[in-house]
Length: 245
Image (cartoon, rainbow, N blue to C red; front, side, top):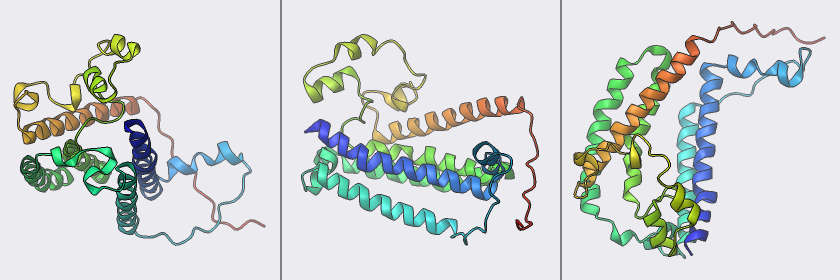
């Protein structure tokens, strides 16, 4: 039952979340950097392509985000019920009765306090050119520990021991390659006893998640900034508004 449950969760859950992330990224480009999209026109339609038509009235971004979140929650709940055989206590095939909800409450309080401090601080400190998207990424890093609430391990991210407990055996390829590479932040956490020790409280692990996420964002951002500094910039060609004959 574990494999079908994971399949349903990813088909009706993770894939939809990824679709919304892609859509919101496209909306951001359309509103703030349309030159990246219009510059592709000549590759698709050629130099003498079809003239750009009148655009339909755009909906406010908050409506798209709110509607997307509501739809995503409804679909996720439905997919969870299907995977759990209709039992709300076994959404996505997981045993939610094993969750320590007192520790979860402490973690949520810590995440809420950090979000109230760091998200406005990021908005205030970041340059205007990247303020919106930078603040969104900081918020994503702060709320990332919410995934710790779910019992079990994520599909495709379990250690050999987790796979053995779930399926009863360890594939030879997984066993031989599991120690080939160790990520700098193993298990998305800071490799220090305070954050990922055997007896570390849940809010300690959540804090390690957030630190690892923010450090990862900074490293990736610096890499892209360094690469972008060597790429010559070209001003986009103005789009003609003259009607075609």
